[in-house]
Image 1 (spheres, rainbow, N blue to C red):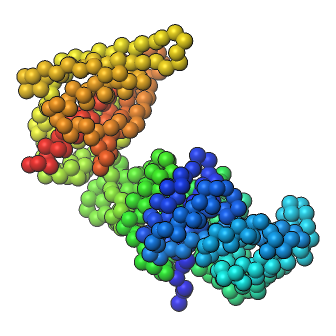
Image 2: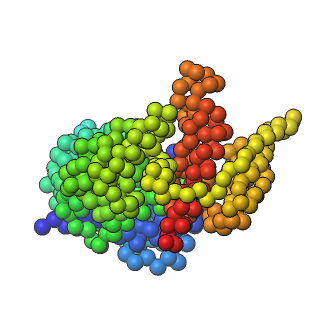
Image 3: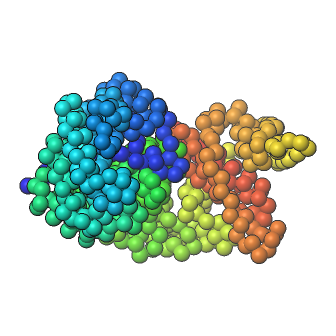
Length: 526
């Protein structure tokens, strides 16, 4: 029987080396808690001799009551001709006071001779001495064989000798690293198989994604006998990133029937991914396998009809198995199956042959001819359906609005002032608000006007604003499509507006955003 796969997460170390990725000290602790709760075995907290933030993490993480995960500090072998006990990097590993130390060493003769500028014999001694010394200090040692596959291609005997040096000195697992990310899956499988046959000890894989094969390479190494896999959540990492642990874990569980040393909360996989994106201040990638917004999105009418009859016809796993959901996309290309499923998803019971379904489709086609697009604006489609089904009522009427852009000479910032007049149940409300731009000012003025009548509007915040020019050949007369993302802290929704005037298009999307919130609140009280 196959051994359980050990999951080793390096989001906080290797992942943090990716462009635009940075974790605050508090954020690092949050990530560690999330990974532990999910069921990750080893969490690499940072480079022990790197920076004060990582040093602080190793101290602060001791206060966390981790249920399962163990923390690893990362470092390198001793420097040439220096004993581990005198090497600052080695001493920093001990000072980190973690149960596991992960060290990397050189497997490729090119690096030994041209980067370290030492002898092959000294490199073997550096590996063995460091592993042995750390073990004597009571640490479990994970050995990362840097550039292993390149080194094995160049000189297989020497690359194996570096692994043997770490094994014989007491390393618990030898991790084969595709540091440049350029090795292909068939090579990963063959080389890993040969290493297992030659050394007969636990082997792991650390893949990068420079050739787009990070996940595939990780799976192939495990298929060849590795039982330890390293990666990052969402594939964060230097250059093109590390192997993404999210699809690695899902594929191991759902496709390869591999077990883990703890019971993973796979139904929270989407939540884990998006929570860590939030902490790292990254926008979720909608195209990620399993957990992306598009992972279970269906647009072709034939596909939608198939999913309606039997979900497995066009879905390789149930969306809720990973905490995701199905999305039926609506456009002028949609058939009645798309519209029907979308309406049913909204909780409205209608029959496929119902005239309302055809009416929604006709209205959809008309609006998309005018430049509207509802694929990314579910809330606008929701409101469209309510209007067609005569379920929509206007919560307020817009009497008018006005924008003043103010520019002051010598000041870099422009100030926008918006005034909004609305009518609610026969009562007029007039408000004025200032913002950094016209859309921000309109947003603030509208919510300020509504707050007295609908206090829940205070929960709504505009989180994203996107503009697309639909027919640029018409220059300043071109139509503009605006997509606005809003949230109330619990839900996020998108609305759209189209006009030849950017402000009018933005206003349309803003009004529909708050109407959607009010409609949801009213529906929840019925």
